[in-house]
Image 1 (cartoon, rainbow over the protein chains, first blue to last red):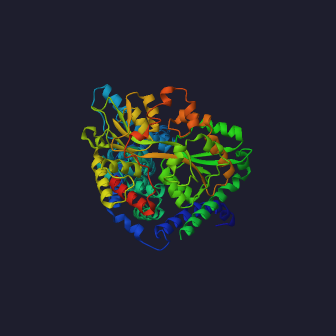
Image 2: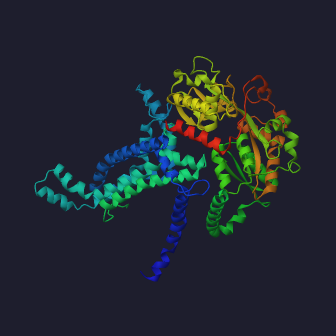
Length: 272
Length: 359
C-alpha cells in the first residue's frame, strides 16, 4: 500500500473508531458492570429470566419465519430478474428499491393505518362484503412488516448471485440431458448459495433486532428482545442490563456471520 | 461510582459534540437569537407553537424545542447530560425524583413574577406533595387519568375501572403503555394505593394486568386519542386534557373519572441545575405564565390550566365552567398523586411491567 492510499483511509479509520469501536467498548463496559461499576455477569445471565427468554424466543421465531418468507418470495423474482433482458431489469429493480427511498418509520406507520380495524384494507374488504382482516397487533402483522421492509435486502444479493451464473453452464447441463428441475437443483441452487447466505444475513439480523416494527404493528402486546433492550435504555434507564442483553444478541449475529463466512468464501454474494 | 459513569458519558458526549461541532463552528452562531437561546424539553404536542414564535419575537431568544413521550423516557436523557437542556416539564413524581437526585435549580420567583401572580394558590398547595417548599416547580398543566369511551360501541355507561376487564369489550380496549398509569388502573380496581410497594398488592395488580392482556387491543400512549376519534376502539385510558379535543372531533366520546378513584397529576416547568441559559429559562417560564399566552396554550392543547388569570379570560362559558377541564375534585374520593418510589421501587414496578408485557 502506498502512503497516498494510507492517507485516503484516515476518514474511514476515524469513522470506525468514533462510531464503531467506542460505542462497542461502551456496550462492553456497561454490559459487564453493575450500577456501582463492579464487574458482573448478571446482565448477561439475565437473558435466562422468563420474560427475557420468551422475548428472545419470539424474536428468533418471528425473524426466522420472515427470513424464510422473504427467501421464498425473493428467489423466483431474482431468477426472473437475472434472466430478463438488460433494459427492463433495471426498471424492475428500481421498482423494488423505490420504497426504500421513503423513511422506514413512515412506511411501517402506513402499514399500521392500512391494517387497522377501520383501516383502508378493511374498508375495501367491507365494500366487497368480504370478512374483515384481523391481523393488526398480532405476530402476523409483525412478520408482514418485517417481510415488507427487508425484502429488497434479500432480492438484491440473490439477483447479484444469480446473474453471475454463466448461461453457458446452464446450457451445458441441458445438453448433457438434465431437465429443468435437475438443472435447478444441481447447478443454479448451489451456485447461488453465496447470495442466499448473504440475503439471509441481511434479513435475519435486522429482523432479530428490530423494535420499531413490533411496537408499531404489535400494539405493544408482543415484546421482542429488541423492545426489551430499547426500553432498558429509554424508559427504565438501566443501561447495564440493556448492554448485557445486546451482547447476548450479538452472539446470534456472530453465529450468523460465521456461517456466512463459511459458505460465502469469496464474498461473491455481498451487496451489489 | 455513579459519578464516574456520568463523567464517562459526559466526556464521551462532549467529545462527540466537539467532533461534530468542529466543521459546523461557523454556522452555529448564526442559528442563535440576538439574546442567545433556551433549550426546552416538553411533552409531545404540549404547547401552541405560536406561543414559541411570539416568545422568540418579543425576547430575541431562540428556542430550541425538543419533545418526549413519557416521564420515563425523559429522565435518562436529561440525566446523561447528552443534551444540556435548560427547562423540562415533567410530572409530579418525576419532579420529586429529580429533586432527590439534585438535578433541579431553585426557582427565583422575583424573576418570574407571572408565576406567583397568575397561578392559583391551590395548585402550589397541591404541588407540595412532591415539591414541599414550592422551590422547584411552576405548574403548567394538570388533570386526571380517566376512561374515554365511545357511547355507540358500549351497551351501558362506563363508570368503573372494573369494566376494562369485561370480556364484552375484548379487542376494544386501549391501555396506556406507561408503567405507572397501567399499574394505577389495576391497583385502583383492587382498592389499593397507586403508590403501594406491598409485594402482595403488586403481584395482585400484575396478575390482573396479565388477565386483561388478551382483551387489550393495544398498549399505546399518544395514539389513544387518534384511535378513539377514529372509532378504532370502544374504551381507552386517557389523560383528561385529551377529552375536550377528542369530543370536539367525535361527539360520541365520553370522558369519566372512574368511581374507584384515579390519579391527579400536575406537569410543571422546572429549570435544570446545569442549565446553560438560566436567565433565558426564567424569561421563558415567565412568558408561558402570562395570562394571554397560557390561554393560547389552553385553547390549543385543551389540558386544564392552573393559570387562574387565563381561565378568567376564557370567553366560552361552557368551556370556562367545563366539568372536564376544571372538575371539582372535592366530589371524588380516592384521588391520589403519584409519589416517587425510589430507585428500588421503580425497578420493582418496571420488572413487573416487563412481565406483563412479555406474557
